[in-house]
Length: 450
Image (cartoon, rainbow, N blue to C red; front, side, top):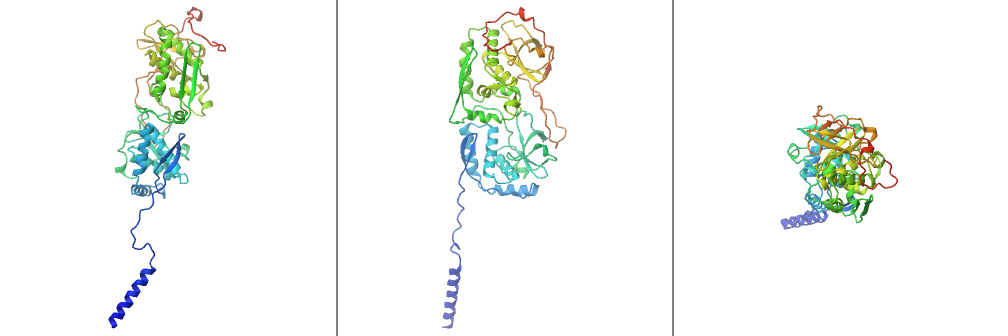
């Protein structure tokens, strides 16, 4: 009987303990509910990408960065990677725009976080996407070190492991002028340094940004007429593209359909013209149909336009016009074009093959190149601006490249505008007097003065 009472007491005690426990005790632990997808604007497009629980950095020092990286590795990032890869294919993004996609995602997901938290997430995602992007730190900030296949101008870079890494602070905060010491900061050697270099080239994929609006551009100088539709969404994307060499802008095709539409309209209009006459018609076309405005007034910064941008904006400068003219000459006439650089001014020169050119020009090897200045309003082929006559320019070819210059200070951030093309100084041969040159049958719009 005594043992029975003890048994009952123990049973009552167990029941009372069980009743006192929380309801969730002993239940199967449920996975946390998935975070809602993050919606944000990307060059006017509303995108949706899976959310990710962020990691907060304690400091920019090695141990804390590595610990935060390991914490991100424990997160389920597969949905984020899948979303980004799908969008990359759907929108035809090259490496630069994938880079921008990752940065915009981090800026919106961590808009209230610190700059170093955003940079850490950007770095983690870019490495997981397969890029050789590195981390660097100053005394109190993280920044990205990004290698490109192409030369980038007017951006700080350092040389590390025989590569040039360009420096990017957080998109919402950061000033290159505050850099004092940069120390490469790799979270884990096995996680970095093995990825691919970012290419700024536009490949066979076409940017598929649909802003829902188009801008009709109609150009007519009395001889040549061209019209086209340009999507402002693509122009917004090109607005913040890294500054590259002029060759890239003249030869790269961002929107193949737009290029083809322009060329198909121009070919029949030039079909019956001799080579020099066709070139002169294109030269006057570029001179007359655009207004002129320097970059600092139009954009506030140095900016070189892709062909698509020159067809979109109402105004351009000498570099933009030279690029557009070079594109037209190469595409329509198949002639070799060189960029001619005077102090503070850029124009082009063309090597003609089936006509006898006359005017200002120079010899490059055995070939004679005739000055063609798309910014000299009313100037024919072979006419140099009066203020540059007697000035010895340098020329840059469209094909030959030089290796970039070495950086002597490994961890010293460096900024320069390096020369991609070999510059060769040439002597301009003076043109005959104006009245000795035959008048060509080219329409000159009223209001323009030679």
